[in-house]
Length: 253
Image (cartoon, rainbow, N blue to C red; front, side):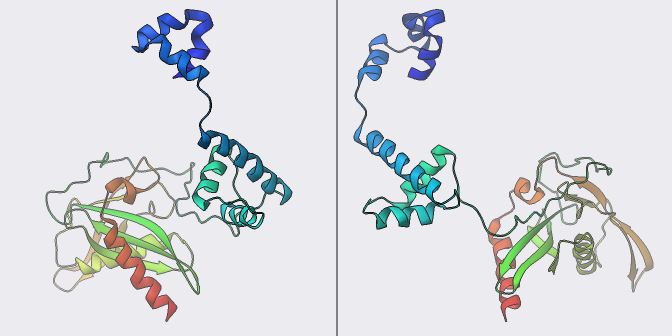
């Protein structure tokens, strides 16, 4: 509040601004003249020490190492306080390894329209499937998992895992979903995903049915305008957590 008044006081004056904000001018002046609290004073002192440790170690220390260094020097401070003050200063430590990306968009390729528009409801099964791609850290390395969820039942109808986020990973998950729902009618099925390259691959497949012979199954493609169709759909995370745990357990055996 006081910052806004300071920025506009030369133009409008303190009392007119306070009148519009429905606060007393005495409140503004009291805040300006009030001495800093003990926490503010300690935060200012800790910021200087955090900045010194950060600069002395070539800007690579994160909150854990800075917290340990301060405690070795006799500065008793909580780790969460160090993390908060580093965030306020806009500094962070170096991170090992490369960042994992599961949404890799190709701006030159054609993108399907967003047929869902964040309305993740379905009147029945096999009307709207939501697909996404994530990764799981295991002892043997990262495992990328593509999965498809039926919005109506919140059931994982297809999934596939691999050590690399290749484009056919999403198609293999779709093939599994079609196989598991092979006895159901899939007319008008909408396959919704994010705008990454992998899930936006063609969704037309040939399928051999024992009862109806060789059929061409086509799902209507839809792409989310946000980075992740799974996060947009608000599908319960325990389902995905169980899938991740089962893959991690199988990978680590």
